[in-house]
Image 1 (cartoon, helix red, strand yellow):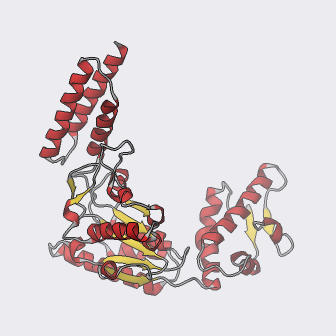
Image 2 (cartoon, helix red, strand yellow):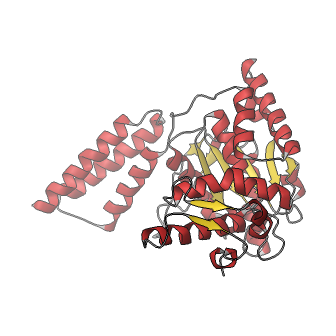
Image 3 (cartoon, rainbow, N blue to C red):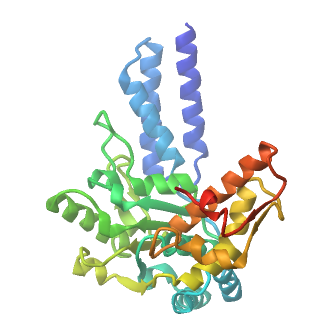
Length: 353
């Protein structure tokens, strides 16, 4: 009896989800209602099978897709400049290219045209750690859009992008639909990160690349079909940004749809400014330290930004600063000191080994 009551409550909850989901296509709404009716019969007969779980999970997923929810774009080029300068030091050429791209979006939108479908896909190309992900996030922040990232290096099958039909035991939606659900809007900025690292054999790579072509083509992505959802989903409002370390493994057809923006490696002098003025204040705060509890002599920065030799990006630099701050935090907690001053004599101790 207790089990039956639980099932009926679950069915009632599913019915409410279906009726309250905004923008849900009527054909799909009818299909989901028929599923609930079927589950109701099973519950009333006292039957409980894996099919109940399968259909219940499917209904919850489909009603979680943001069919009609979206954010309003912020079309302000001055704010875009501020965000780019706030989040990225140097890279003036790259920032200029992004501002030119955003200017086109703004102009098309102001003149009542479909900006996203008429704009090429941005492909950020550069070595690891040069700021490709943070630049994509800055684009989303500038436009006032939600942001999500899909690590393409972890995609080893086309099903991971397009989903698996609910008839399979391991059925689930693909990463594109999951990104929409995570952001809760139909017009997020989605970063397809490191598309050059798509794994798998040649045939599998070709399948994945063909799906990417469909996703990134405005003429096709208006009715993208995820195998799990099994209903066309409009991706035309999504702003896709791609990144890659190199373009050598990308097909000509894919490259033809993209506008390549090359991101140069940072010089040591640029890294010093980034570490001192951008990264360090954030890391100090995240470590629980207060201003003045850690002091670094100006002449030490070259040794901090390059402790292990050349590195094109700033990820290892960020980890170095985090390690320093953690050691300082421990000394303060243990009562060994109230303030730590890094000098040439003690720097080696605070650097990661």
